[in-house]
Image (cartoon, rainbow, N blue to C red; front, side, top):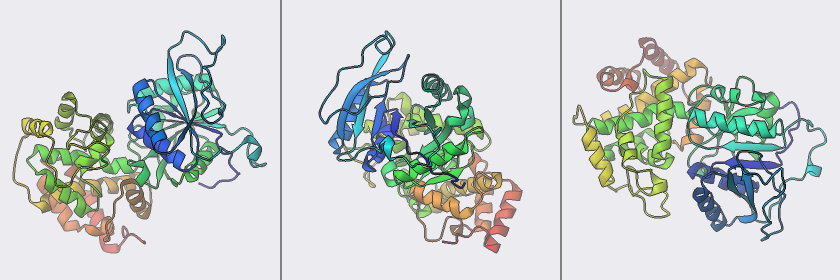
Length: 448
């Protein structure tokens, strides 16, 4: 899309959700010199996130209140170190449920002032951007958007960090759906130099331009993708992650899964990636994937089994793997968490011996099939951009290129052999035929 006008910088950034993802999004803004307001109805999570941001070198300059049920209160910056009293008065001090809000500011960085706005910026562009990263469930996100739009009117753009839900499922809850879009950050946010920007059915071009400019401001160039379940990157990730868990269910060794991922070009094991995402978030996203593509996804009972045993992933220091305090990754030589091993053994079925080649194909081919379906559906139209998204969104690297590592006959054989076992290995005959032709003619070859 072309920017036809100069966009107005957002004067206030509010992040709703102070969990693992919300903390990462806040940190990305602050490292780019962009002040944020952080809100969460879980006071413990909010406090922990605020303390972590301060410990990372950012400065707390304001503490106030967020009136969750009556009015969204914006705060003027306080002097460094000053903690003003909570707002009072009949319009602000109500009996409504309150949650604490932290306003964090990057060290020695000031937000753009109103006076500094370009003269030709459209006066009707909202001054506030709200990015939500709450639970990955439609009802909760719709309720939030309905409440925020009721109190903020046309003064704010509402952006969802959803990784799996269509914006069309969310924007109808807002009073002004033209001000709603998707802005999906990849995990780990600090290591991923791209975001997906999604226009809903009624999102205005001005909003897309303004949010795209903001994404570039914080060093995350946007990739515009169609409003489809999972968008682009998660659409490719779903069958890959789901098949990794299915492989465990069928007797594959977790270290063979790690080796298969490395051969594909992924920076870490898919089991470790699920831990990073968070088991509950991965489960909610997987449920959305199954609902959108029931013929492509066969949920495994292993993930809900882990959740029932109170394993949460890296944020809780235990998931498929155990994580030492402050550790960003699992030890590559580590064994599975003992509780995870018990759950896997409980649900194993159709156990067989797996070679490394077979494990690799059962990770790579589902992603390839999904990539072909994505291109076919027009979620994105250029194979090069798909590879760019894999690099920037997932940290994928492979000198052969994504499509270049596949041979059509091998893919066909793997699909025929393993499709009875794994739904994600099934591909329409026409798709397999087109793959062979595309690989032969170089249609899918990366130009980079």
